[in-house]
Structures are given as C-alpha cells and as structure tokens.
Image (cartoon, rainbow, N blue to C red; front, top):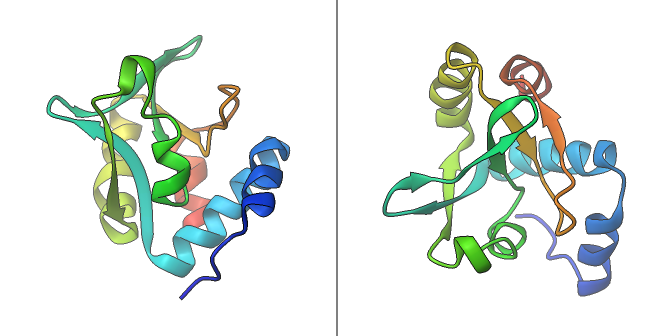
Length: 123
C-alpha cells in the first residue's frame, strides 16, 4: 500500500517539472499496478495536441479528478490495470499513433510520451 500524500506533497507534485511527474507516475503505476484516466459514457477522454490525438493518464484517482471540470465535468476517474495498460492500451496507441500525456497538471502541462517510450519505462 502506498503512503497517502499530504496536500502539500500533492501541490509540490503538481508544480514539479514534467520529468519529475513522469518519474512519480511510473513509480506509482508499478507500485499500485494501476493507471488512471478520465472517462464518460462516450469512453476515455482524448485531447488534441499539436502532434495529434493524446490520451491522458494519472498516478491516482484524485489527481485525475482535478481535471473533471468544465468541458469534462461529466467524466470520472477510472482505473486501468497496469497489465491491461501495457498489453492492450499501449500497443493500440502505438498503432493509432496516439501519444500519452503523463500526469498533466492543472496548467495543462504534462509529459507527452509515445506509447513506445512508456512501454520501456513501465517494463
């Protein structure tokens, strides 16, 4: 079981550089065997970036739920097992040329990774 983060620790993570949030995401995903995204009745949320479609993932439900506002107020955090993420999501995202925004913060900043990069980090 992972240690619960204090509000200060959560805020520090949100303002940390992308590389630190990416490292934290990988560590949490491996420890909890879960990846979190946002979903509504239409499926998982995708955003458009300069590089094309992008799916967003977070290390826990609370970080993901911070994004469930405005355009996405009908979304809820949904967990995906790390195994499913690695064996189904990442290969599919690779085929569809969809990138992954890892642990975006409330400023819309997140480490944009390819599925191949994430596959290597989560191995």
